[in-house]
Length: 344
Ligand SMILES: C[S@@+](CC[C@H](N)C(=O)[O-])C[C@H]1O[C@@H](n2cnc3c(N)ncnc32)[C@H](O)[C@@H]1O
Image (cartoon, rainbow, N blue to C red; front, side, top):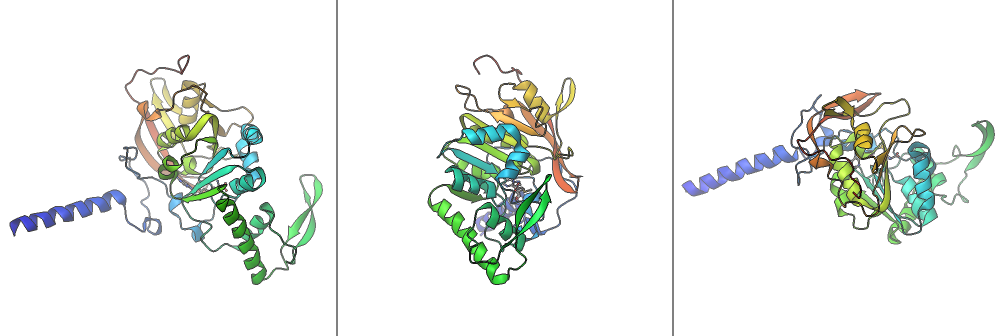
């Protein structure tokens, strides 16, 4: 009897402990605390991701999440354009925090790339608003021959251009276009060219087998997740030799999450710290000052092991330009801080 009661008590404690660690099931629907303190977010095996953006249900999500390939080229800059042009049929592109995954789906359909989109919400499963269906129809080249899509001449970037006009469409037409867009996605998925993985990049990246030639993160996981050291380690591990990751870490106006590294010489933004500490693996070009580019050199180490160099001291949620972004304070671990040594 006594033993049974003791067992029950232990089970109850374990159950409460699991709830505390895992968080409430409907976390996205509850009011999140104003500021959060650092906990064991980067402990191996613990997939606790500090990220408010990713917990917004798809139908309540209002930030742009359906950028097309052209937008990706504009936001990720010349390095990404070159990497895309150099990619061959069957090369792997992973888009981390890819929203609806329109850009990658375009890459799959028009270039034969093998694409993976990781996103916390399932935007394909949710009901699509009309604007989403319109942009999908245009970006994926959905057949509109039997749907009353008109064209309008508008002034854009210094010239007149024809743009499709959807004003004549009724609900049934939108349903037809949405079904055709979904059919394109299905066909690309069946052909092994498009995989839409719903969840956190922190959890999904290690499950992707083939190594990537390109990884993109356009206002995705890096922007909205606090543990950027873990993400960068995962991106590096997911790259093929000669592959590159393109990470947009601030908007055109410079708004973005602040990750600061405490060094002996004072605090340094994480992106600048990386470029200085690993000059052969990280760069920020003058032309694209908001894009951090990570390369995995041929013959280089298989792991970046940034977590062996930096540890997170604290993080907090800060409102920047109308976005809730987790900032982080990092500290160099007490290690031999070897710079990129020759041959590494
Ligand atoms: C602003 S949208 C951008 C989407 C897409 N990159 C685009 O430009 O159209 C950000 C998306 O990243 C997703 N996201 C944020 N953090 C993530 C994470 N750690 N893992 C997976 N998805 C994440 C969010 O769920 C959201 O759908």
